[in-house]
Length: 221
Image (spheres, rainbow, N blue to C red):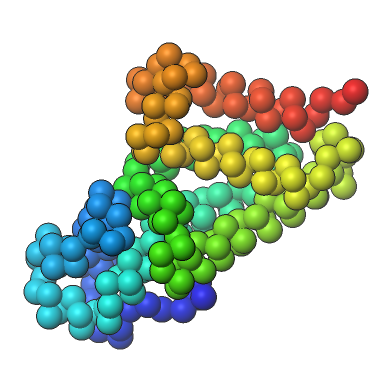
């Protein structure tokens, strides 16, 4: 499903600047209002095109949403995948993952908001639900492979299960990215640390989370 195109051929022919403008305006609308309340007419207006032209590019609102979702997630997924498939030791990868997550969450906050919205409501549309599950499935396999390889090399404790640790690691990073962008997680961060995450020292966040991950991967009885 991830390789399927959810836009029409005319959208493929327009220049990259216009493509990005349409998608960015779509992401702004979907991230702020959620899928159901987002207005495709307003997206078209903000992108400087007619609603008729918008429907020449996308058959449905759902197709526009999926294209926006893929656009936003592809940027983060590529950055994370490049780190996970590298030859670095697992803890080096972990630090790079944390740094990339922090930077991406600040630079592309609307992407994360949109993803959080649809994760919370992904049962509402079957196609969107399946897309989110496929994104998560692909990411889980890469995490599992990276941890399994580290286990085989003796870089991590020998009694861990790669699948469980992949799940826990992904949840830590997902919570971190949502903490920068979503009210519930931002407030939770503040409740625990006493600091607004937007005023927090990123280096301290990185170092503390890395210590937590390192202790999980390397501590032995």
